[in-house]
Length: 239
Length: 234
Image 1: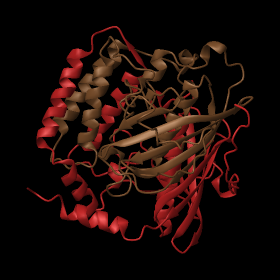
Image 2 (image 1 turned 30 degrees about the horizontal axis):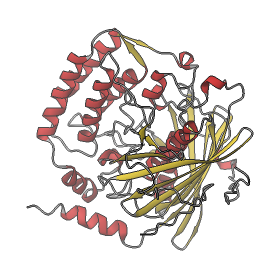
Image 3 (image 1 turned 90 degrees about the horizontal axis):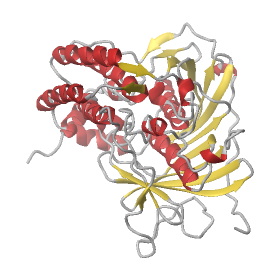
């Protein structure tokens, strides 16, 4: 290759770390949904335990009999479950989408889940310890998981600041490895709103060490969310 | 149909527009993962099914299932040996790929990915994402798009014989990424300068460009030649 191409890159966003210092705490718990009458959160908690084991465990025994029993559980749930379309319809008509969120959701197996607190100045903060199932490089959180956490915290802090939108860009700067198996602190805050455009910034720390920063720009969608939501509230067209 | 992207690649062809006439349509499986002999992969598969059934669901009572699964986990804990992170000191050992949260077949958190590679080094993965990946109504969560991009970019580096950790990742979202629809991620290494590695990626749903990504990776100091070209996560 003779002349390497140059990818035009935006400047690194300057993230104001002052409000994002990890040691602040004592905020009000927010986005916490504890009602678990049906036991769904408890079920997902148990699945999370398996999640870590299948990922990071070594087994000399044949797991097939266990898999069969999980399959039976899944079969029973499937028989009792509404279609995915119907479930979407229900979650969005009741605004009960937080429990489904892949980062915060207590009924989502993908979610760590994060539990947020809201600080007095509008900064959103969560402390979490991620297990082997979130590992990328040895002993580090996967870089993509770091981005996932950022997109979620920025989205939620925008929501609580009163203007929310869909991500237009997300820039993540990785400053040092984010560790698994030790507590990390995820923070986010909205920094600017200009018409439909919204900017938010975030940081992840391990102790006092800065692991990553992020800036996202979000735009309040014109009607799209409402359209989607209306359609889902109406539900699928039954044949 | 012309598809434009922001990614500039070393050749003129934008990512995500692999010409079917000039490239094998199937590609070559890249880092195929075989099922773990213990059955852990099959177990992860069932857990993924469960995952799709519980997210956003409303059930009257699942306490029986809780008891069953709790008993299973207790048993799993008793018969399994947990691997300490220190034991993952080598990049790209089979256990490491399989446990990856984006591509790993043994990790119930991963979609997973089954990438293919083309002769020009482009890595492609096609998949559909279910309700547990939802962000905005009917759309894939933006952070999930970023998660898969990061992995795809790492795979593109691996296909080009590089090893790197993400230094920065920039994702631009062009249009909503639909749930349940066939999605196509493509990534390719752009250039290498010393320990710095650049790569770009696109995400399409049909002909619609949903998002693009570009990232800078830094090769860790002391990486061994034997590690190059091994799948690198994150």
